[in-house]
Length: 346
Ligand SMILES: [Zn+2]
Image 1 (tube, rainbow, N blue to C red):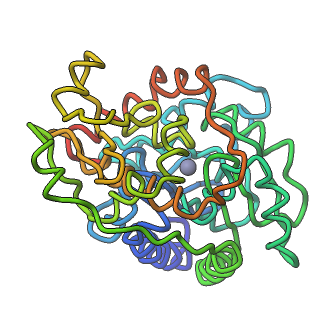
Image 2 (cartoon, helix red, strand yellow):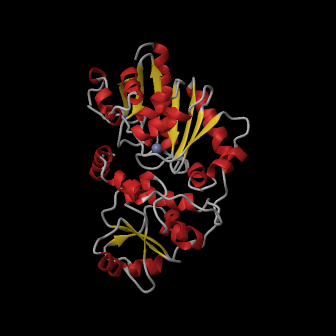
Image 3 (cartoon, rainbow, N blue to C red):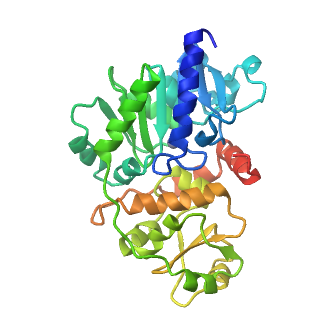
């Protein structure tokens, strides 16, 4: 830390990060990240760590900002490996900076918060999302960034759309970025934008736990009862069945969603697919998770229920293409994050 003031600001950011991480409507699992610029150093959440652990664990990594930005500018693939820019003397645990480090470095403001807010995502997956956000964010300097894979492609997409004064980014099929000079100002802006983008979730019936239990085999109920809604609400189920809506869904749960056919139990679905998916949706009843599914998978399955319940049932949606799904699954940085997740350290 360069100064006492920077150290105090980082402490405030860690407290805010932990509170963001505990709100499943704001961030899920190892998703979302926060940062502080202190001189030429960017302190950013480490890849694979959870924001909710920001106070109990050392999850912030120092990164040399200028060379990273130069790499983005040159379209140098090195910008896709932010660990090459970590300041090792200040990083005794050898943590890797978030794969979204470039998003934070590109914003000129000192404090940046990136969240996978379910209200924002519910708009950001709609084909008319930019127009719908425009109706709600009057008086805010914001920019819309269409979907790009996190890392260098997203950094380039942001760099091309960033105008002076912009302190809010809506990332298509992804989430929200807010930036300010202080932690309290960033927190206030986050609250304001989330309030403006808030949408009611469609109410759903309760899950049929008895039916799910008879179908389960070696699968189990989700960690939270909220996850079931996506299989119970017909509109949400239809949206989920049609594909992958945002990157962390693919990372933690695989491509799209698996829906059981009438009369099928878990064993029947697994036999039909020749594989055991992380989650199976049983229409009208609820969701079952594979016995060894990670905490991250549970968090993302609930996220799918929270997002789809807010999407306008009549809206046309943008889904990740087959190529976009593949590049997430086969990407080194994401394989690292999945490994931490599977190990339970994420
Ligand atoms: Zn993100």
